[in-house]
Length: 136
Image 1 (cartoon, helix red, strand yellow):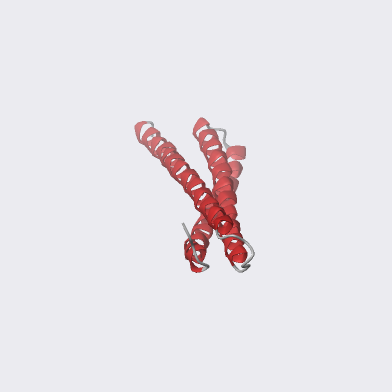
Image 2: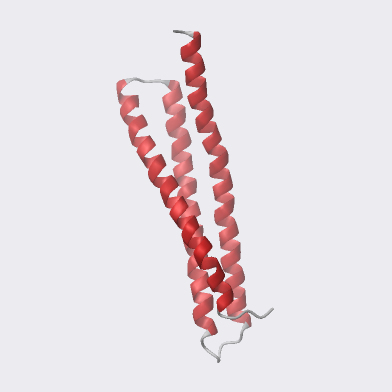
């Protein structure tokens, strides 16, 4: 398989948008954590504790999403740089580009896990509303 310098550049726009989305998720969840911690100090509730635990795990996975996404971006750029040197066999930038794609898949895998956890967080919220409606 031979690739040219334009092939790794195709992942640039996707990687940039993903990193922006990851950062927005991180900032949103960080704000929720701060709010829940303040709420937890005023009233201790098992649901709030569960939400904080859930958000803590989600933040960890978002960090991993960002790390693997940045690694993908880094290896794609490295692949492009290596293609500029004629003395380097084309197989080396090709392998590095394949590594870039694999690291992007890892990043997206953590995104899927984090999305599944976000559903749990919504379930905690819905359980709270159900309890309030049952016990006014």
